[in-house]
Length: 416
Image 1 (cartoon, rainbow, N blue to C red):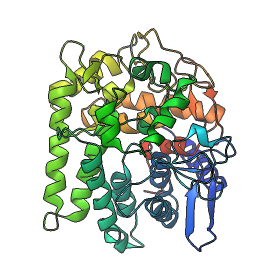
Image 2: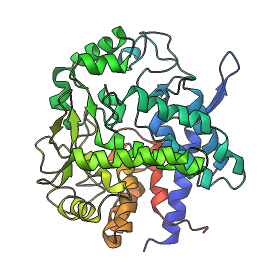
Image 3: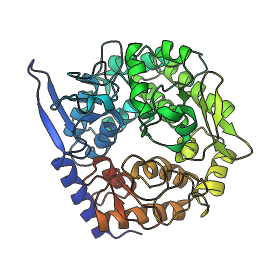
């Protein structure tokens, strides 16, 4: 049991972090924006999944800001339903930074042309549930949300198997994960060939169908599809069964079944990404391989294997602090800081946010509380950092990192 005083102190620090990182204003044409920087000055833009996590954290303190965060994210998108990985509201990506982003040109763009893990509908439902002061928020942008998930279905599932595809490692948010090493090879995230990957996509105008048909460097990513399925479930509930909700519930069930049928590896007890046109399993154990645990419809025997054989196993993911982003058994496991390799071992709080509730649902309450308590101790010692060393708890990389405030969503609210 975590003392109430510790929870109150953490919540105060979380709110201060979010408020410090808040940005609001208008473009020259009068378009308003309001969002939370992940961690200024290094991360000063609006990132898709960061903003979803920020909105969930904001819903504990200031639901109007949570709603504005998600409205701004939708506003960054296009009428056809595309929502960008990154939006450059108050600080356009200049020529020095633009080559690092999947933008249409190398200067002057207001947004990236790539996607990111599509969890806006999930975040929208969570924020709507916290918006007793604005019940209309639940229904206000359903057409735009439908357009977004229809775009993903149309543009990113060309083989119609229920699994959407990413064409760029950054699109999952896991950028430099070792599971992409064998897929992107000399074009992976921290090598010079990465710039050619971005340029190649520019030359095809980010036509994902053309890219998937022509090249092998694309992935049906497990984590991306888990959060896609969870968001389709949320969208179905937001719409209701009488207003199209059944369609999105059916799509979610199809994606969930495809993950089980095509990505589950019985021998290892893990889920693996499928790479390239031949859909080769990528047999690298990262936390993405555990992420289907978050699906309530996952068969219990599969879920318990993920927990008992991997998540709680000290030789794999049962680390002293948090949940490592890569299994300790993998040769690529690196628990400390590296400028370009941040998803190769360190523990991130969004990982716990996704997996801990599923552990509790399955009855692993004591083990789940241990993970949350270890992260609480790390934050108390080092603040809200980008990630943490899972062996020592040392806080690493960016400071005042916005989505690490998600930890409050795993703790009891002292105000009831």
